[in-house]
Length: 276
Image: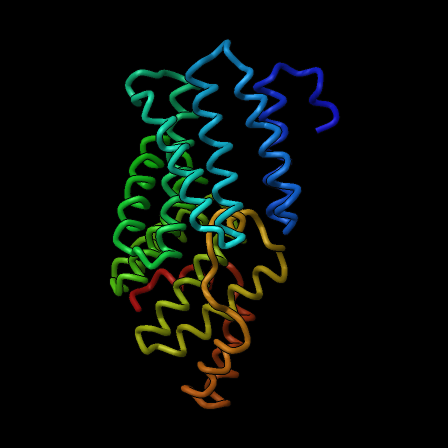
């Protein structure tokens, strides 16, 4: 960040928002918000490329809205994200080309997904599902695998909340296959967690326990990765595991746990992609 002062405004702003995202991902929401607000002021100074300036303003508003949502300030988050959506409506996808079009599409994905997460937190599952569907459609147009992983995960979360477990599993398996293809083991682990939660809802405690154990083993070995900074996690704590143990009995639970801990990424993904 210190070295960005000699850059043009939009490059300074990009450096600030990237640094802010890193602080937020590591739990320092206040510092993340401060840097995002600084970047917003810089983007407003950039009159050389209007479309890109508007797009990046929307990205910063999305980041600030996401941080507000993490603080459970859903009204404030919704207001910021609505502002971001309004900015993006100033242009159409067909109005732009090249780099500007790509950044516009990625901004649309972020705003739709973060606003959908707010609606999900407010128990407006249908509105959330529609926003995630729109985000996924734009991610497919952008052909950006990070946007696809975020959008597939979020849409699966909404489908799970709506009670459409088969629909949730379908999106999760698509995202898991994509993460595995990209060799993104930590993102694959978060997908395994949600598939474990779905298996638990489908009254398949053995599958749930195996997948939870495999996910924990991968994250313990590889670190937390990046996906958790963009999406909510399913409950995965000792209380969840205790409930599974109670369903299965000690011996069966320990056997399933041992399978998950020793499976490794390839075997765990192969198992998760099988028909439950």
